[in-house]
Length: 467
Image (cartoon, rainbow, N blue to C red; front, side, top):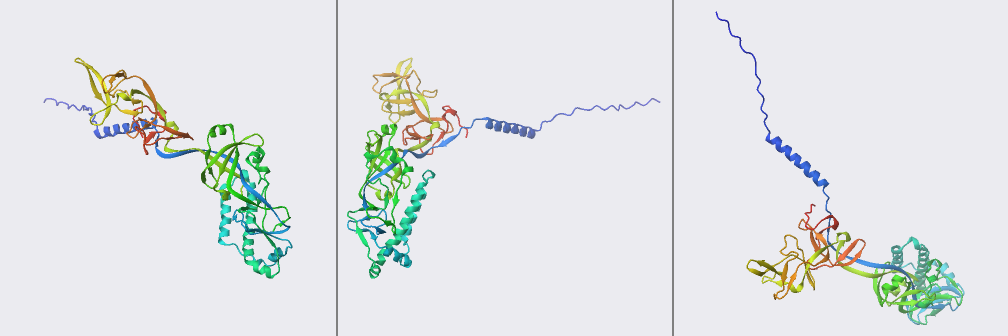
């Protein structure tokens, strides 16, 4: 019997074939792309832009001046207790009683013994007191704290005057019944009454010196009803003219800037009033140069003031407001306006000289214009332009030819409305505080809401902008 053959138990392992998962591959590629895009975006310099808006620039210089008016001081006719009939800063007619003097003191004693006779303040009185406080609050300055004491004196005097006016008008008959006699004194002229006396009432522009502007040495007295007055002492003053002056020191630059001007536009920041004032230059008593502003309005608002802060508006320009660092300049080829040709469809261009095998001919081409002024047309001779440096253009009549080459610069900004930097010319009207006002509605220029590059040095002409 033949022996049995042994079975071959050796097992041969087959290599497993590597299969590519398309989904996994796509996911990997997308992930790599996203990482690369984000990385590139973060590393890329971002171009900041600015949206053009309308605006204005007002240039002004601040001054402090002394107010000079036509003022006449009236002295008391007798000694005794004062009683006023006209509120401070109000006009009075000739012959109207301004004050009275109680020589015996009986009137003052009667008012003290009968406080019920003194009427309360009216709504109008309270409104005027509030106005005084409001004006002071709007103009308060730590550097002029002494004005607070002046305000306190003015308010006290005003309250007493209001009370006194109300009482005197209602008590006339009753006082006569009590046998209380006092002398009242009418105004000899018409004008504005003021009870603030400072000794500068007779000062003229030619009398001014540098010492006049030292507010630390300034003193004034404010008389009020109930005060004891001596005969011959100042009791009130009368402003007899609506014409008043503001005199202020001038620097050498002020003299140059105001030279040849006879009017200045001024603004009072405390009141918000802006007005024109006649201007002249005067020599003071110390030989210094001083400016003199002459006005005929708003006198009543300043009757209680000797000094006033004001601003001289030297420029007030409106237009399109853009940052200074957005501005750049670019050279353009210039072609005389006399070579400009208008086609039948209304488009403007030039007759370009073309040389071929058959000879020389003229071809109408219309390049992109960046400006056209009275003398030149400004064009860019970049690759996609139909005109390049060295080309010749002919005049419309064909008699003259001009070779493109000379350049002139234009001032402008880069507009990015279309997603790439496009030069747009500007006309700067005024500059201040890192901003410019440029003329609006200019040909080939900017419009409101245009987007421009914030810093012109960060881009090149035609560059794609990523925002």
